[in-house]
Length: 335
Image (cartoon, rainbow, N blue to C red; front, top):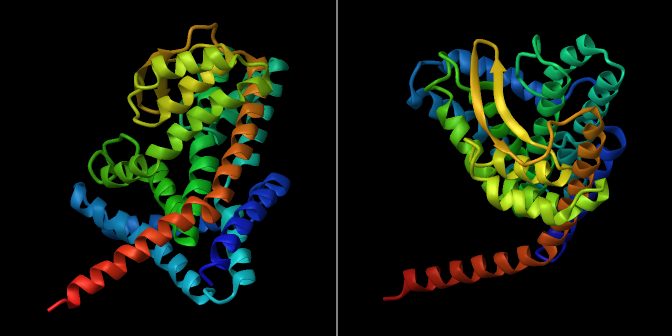
């Protein structure tokens, strides 16, 4: 089984990615939506305005899917076809690449048609900003920034965690990312309670976000972008963003598209001023299709990395862990 499990995981990741590419998110009975309802009920039972309650909530809400994934992994340890099928189903469930690109294209059409009311209404599918006063450049900027960040959150990070940790990694990452969207934002209710979920999400995205930035630089030419400019902007601006991860993705996308991102973001009841990323003009409707094309290319590149990991570096890591375990056991039994 040690030989077939990595192949089964890799095959499942590829199959799940293909399902997302072909069909997108399930229209009804989406498991992530079901998890969100369950987490909401758990939050109502555990909520107190302090970090200790938030840590307990995060541990339970993330720990349950991880344990479920671990149990399924054990149950299929001698059944590689079943393992591949479960990984494929989980991958399809947690990915959101097709939906992300679709939303960018819908927004682009609305802006090209000059239909600002429709564009403002659609923005809620991508981010939590207040769209009521946004004009075309600001709606386009919000869309490009959301596509850049969510390419990491909804595509690269799930694939990477699935490659490194299989079913527990897929389910645990999506649970943590969903909690961050639910309680990780700054508000009077979640200022302290949501901090553990936000910090866990930041930690889990440290590597995926940086990989997303590098892959965005690499694939920039697929959308007529300049790879050299993307590299320069990414290196210069990626650490200016207040988020430890979002700036990695947004700076690379700004350089690839030749636009300037950042500025004042208005949410419901509060506003934030973000540093500028990039040197070009403000985004327009025409940039959204290019951003979607880059997002799709980054997803394919991340899939190649993720599918290769279980049968290459993953085997080496497993061998080192097993050897370390045997050595520790021998030392423990030494008289």
